Each structure stands twice: as structure tokens, then as C-alpha cells.
Image (cartoon, rainbow, N blue to C red; front, side):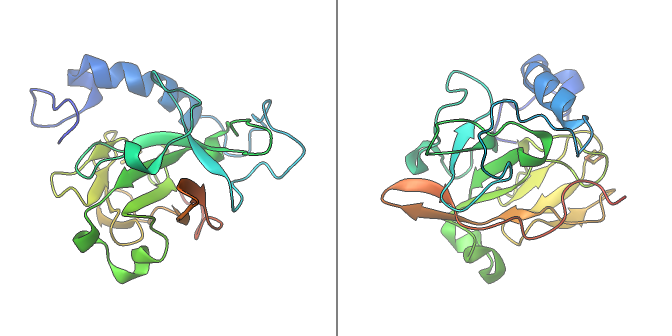
Length: 197
Ligand code: FES
């Protein structure tokens, strides 16, 4: 793990106070019902990510600030984010919009993911398809991402396919692009969100 690797082999939040603190807010949101109308900040537009939206940090010192392409570095932990409406400047906060964003090495990205990547940056629904925990950890391979709740692993370089369960459904990928130097949403989620019902 490249993000505050805890002293235990399991890399779980239980043994890492920093990770536990970060996950508390994200987990509370992640466990809300998928259909919850939590977009108090939204404008009259669609409440889902739309082409042209920017991405904003979910938490931390840069909370609600736009993520710039140069902010993300290959080998660093995924960043939790929400879509940002560029017209209003509003962050579209809801469980279904929570994203996990990671920069990969260009040579690792499979063709199926390449068309949805922007300068090596890929974005997926952050809601684990097992039980819905937020996905926050980079696998030692640096091309896969891990859910710490029960250890599911998803290949970020290959459309979020499951490489280790208990999850059985891949993560939905959100296409990205770089336009005029900005990191933008380039399409809709390419699959269902969250655990199978
Ligand atoms: S909620 Fe992610 S592995 Fe169980």
C-alpha cells in the first residue's frame, strides 16, 4: 500500500487511525440508501455526473476544490471525489456520485479502460459492489484498488473488474477527458452502481 501503510498486514481501517478517521465520513455516506435525495447543493440540472462536469475533492484540505490533472500521481492512493458543476460551482454530493479517482501508469492501462482514461487518470463509482463501503486503497500492484471492509480487489486498469472477492460485480467506470487543461467528465457511468439487489 502506498497510502499511510499501517503496521498490520491486513491494511484495514481498524489498525490505522488516520485511515479510520478518513473513512468515517465516507462510510456514513456510503451506507446511506442509494436512492437518497441528498443533493441539497444541486442546481436544477441532472443530479448525476454529466459530460463537462469537473471533479472536486470530497474531503481534506482541498475539500470541494477542483481536482486538477497534475494533482494526481501514479502510485498514490485513490482520491474520493464528487462531480462539480462548472456553471454553478456546486459540488454534487450524494452517495451515487461518490467517485474513487486514481492515476495509473500509462503502460498498465488496458485498451478497454484507455478510452475512459485521461492522461492515466481513471474514475469509478467508489461504492463497493459487495456491501457498499467506499473504496480508498491502492493495491501493491498500483493498478488495482481495494475495499478495506472485506478485501475485494478491483482492477482499475481494466474497467474495474473484480480480481478478488467477495464482490462479484465490477465497479462502474466514469469516463474522463482533459479539456483545455481541466479534468472533466466525458460520459455516463458504464454500469450499475453499488451491490447487486
Ligand atoms: S463492502 Fe467492499 S468488500 Fe465488502
